[in-house]
Length: 372
Image (cartoon, rainbow, N blue to C red; front, side, top):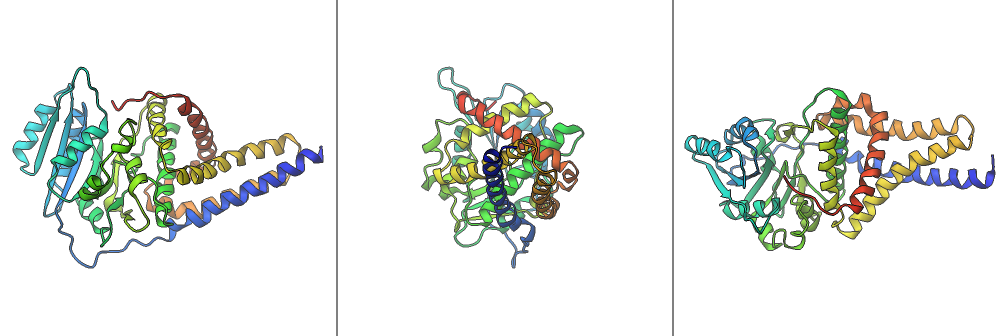
């Protein structure tokens, strides 16, 4: 074995391990010890729930009533029927006749001027009558009738954004396990970064912010040219340590249906990666360091094996990181409703980092994306 190759690789591996342990313990460890507090008084502020739907007839039929029948004293539901070609309009008429607090806004497609989801969201915000807005998607269902109440509990004086959590339904197979692990990893990251005073994104499946913040920041004006990012780019641009809080109470979760094929998942993630390019420079650097060292960790382990390092070095380094991950992530997985994924963890973590690496490379050269 050539020492001039082994020594620098081993030193670099130690540096990468230290960086990874920082993110695992100091940053991600915050969620495991985070305590869900109950409010001191009843929450009754008016809320507008906004759903943008394009050709979502089946999902609306299945999930909309769960949102319209929330246990909350004062709220409206604004559904933006965005250029649907199915029978969504007819279905929504039926819902409107039964639920007076449902407001439907119908958009028609212009032959020359196409629009993405951000336009639909903007129309929904303008149609909303209340200051506090709560967003979800047509293919999502609240975990309880107290979803609105729980999300609103986190508003305190000075709060303008509340980041919620949206897990995926459990199913069979590796694809489903991977989707749920990826969702957990994403949520663990944005929730703990917010707890650490650096909120950088949220997910539109379960996100709340104020109407005044939307208009003060001119909505999506600075990134309207990017089709994706109605949720994470808005949060990235407007969230601060002072105006952002998180909510992970089990009643506040919003369940989503996972993709059924790798192709569908790939298209979704390529679209999401496109928005990441527009994050603040400081956020991109930190996230690149985190992801880059995670990928490099496995690459360096492979190089160490190829260099025929002493038999105990690679297992020892790998087990140090894995052990701390299991200690930190197990309580976090319990709080985020995906504890059964822990059994797949070693395989999923490796595959996840390979997936993210390939995805980042592909997304760099792909420019055209679409909503639906």
